[in-house]
Length: 117
Length: 113
Image (cartoon, rainbow over all chains, first blue to last red; front, side, top):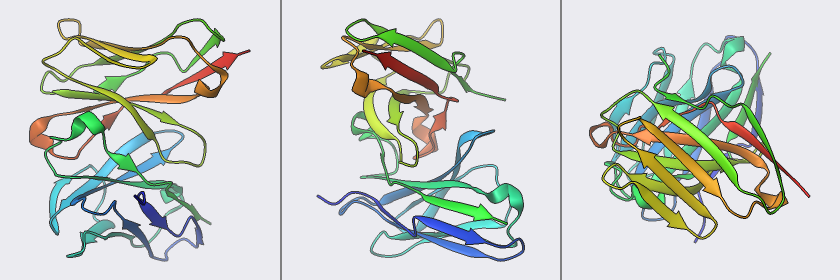
């Protein structure tokens, strides 16, 4: 089956702009989580959506937001971009929200590399 | 406050030998632990997981051990192969936190032929 698809793969934006990243989960998966990876902070949880509802949120400013559609596809948006937002943004999908399929782990996409100049 | 720690940034092992990657955690609410492997410019790939009610889980060459009293887990890879060279992340989740995984900083494993 198709894996988790993230688009675009690479993106260059200017400080102050906004950006929208997209994630299509594995078919049948209802939970989508977003992570930010930077060299200094490692992999950090942004938020999780399940059945179009945000179930959990990490410690990121309100400039970071997301949503999930009825087909489980998810988008995340970053407004007023800062240089420090340059990172690899990863999304992960799983069957449900409570980690009951944790024995299979969460499946990650290849990420979107965002560069803010 | 780093709740999941991998204190060794790197590890070098000879092909065929055992690789042992370590991870410590501080939050006693964690009830699931996972190991991921990551290549540059790719997303992490799930390797193996363990529930807090177990102390060992095996899958082929990979075995994860959990010591709850010490809040410590380790991943054993036997025998190590050059293709295992990658960054390994341990992650933890709490059942009441849904899909939120807390990752360690990663250990870069290099398996030399």
